[in-house]
Length: 178
Image (tube, rainbow, N blue to C red):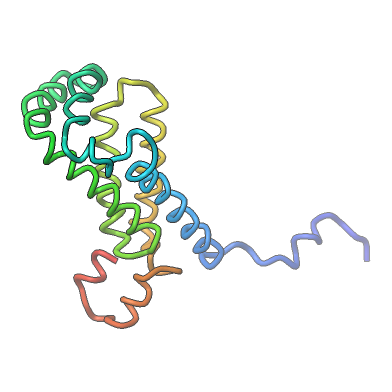
């Protein structure tokens, strides 16, 4: 029998869904780090007292976001609604980042966390998209990762969602968010 290079691939099984699950779990955990970083780390940490009080958000709306909004109507919404109620929106942003990060890293209610991540990333693009293509690209990556986590039920492999679904298999509300 003559040896050919095609024989190398005969023994290997083709990739299946079983091979994709660890990759999706890895994607879920890595994308959660971006949201945890946004919430807790750096000078722009959303959980920092200066941001949660609304002062930093109001300052950023008037100095930056009004100029980087993708449309003048979005800038008007920022000035008319977000700036006067900056403390509420700052708390909403901080809670959303924390919830997304915890949800994705633990695999707890991943579909809900991914849906919130998609909304948050879209808002980031609308508010700061004109700042540059890096802002749009980074948030597009977060939207894509969240959409994959949402569509594949990424928490049901190596996550708390797997134990919850096993414990309560007929709960429809749990299947919707997990």
